[in-house]
Amino acid sequence: MEDMKKLITRVGEAIRGLFNHNLNLKPVNAVYKPVFNIRVGNSFSGHGMRMYTSNVDDTKLISFNNSYYLNSVSCVYNNKLNKTDIVERTNSKTPKYIIRFIEHLQCKYGEKVEKLKYEHVDKNEKICIWISKEDIVCNRKYTRNDMHFNNHYDNIDNLKKLTLFVSKIKSLIHKTDYDTLMLKHIETSNNPSFLYKYEINFIT
Image (cartoon, rainbow, N blue to C red; front, top):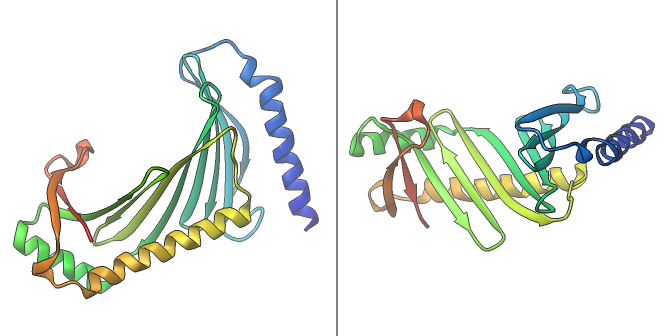
């Protein structure tokens, strides 16, 4: 507990230092400056943390990233907009029944189909899940006014809720007949390295 208090104190001092110095710098194109770094496992098991600032033209950003084993939470504060963009990310291994599901779709649509994609969007957040034969990656993106950095308890709790949401999508796939899956469309990935590969967007 004492080590955690010292850690929190150091992070607080780093943030105060940003306002005393970095945020008063004249705008400089694409300047990146590490501020604080904790290697994985140095604070508690599976945890790593990194803080840095960046200046892009007249916009100054503070990025505060926490990793928890394969999962992570990234918070980026925009000084110009006075808003914080938050991305919570989970990563897990794809179960065998979903691998078989994708292989069936590849037989149906062609080998270029490599991913399933699921989106959930409302006015406050966007959740995207990408499912390949190797892993399942889920991103939840939302914005908060002012500077907003969650503590570890909130981060871990939110990641647990996100993992539960992914489990529901996995269950949906498990219960869905291959040929009755409601497909929206097949689209080309925006990533140049996947120029000739496709992902299938599906809806519930």
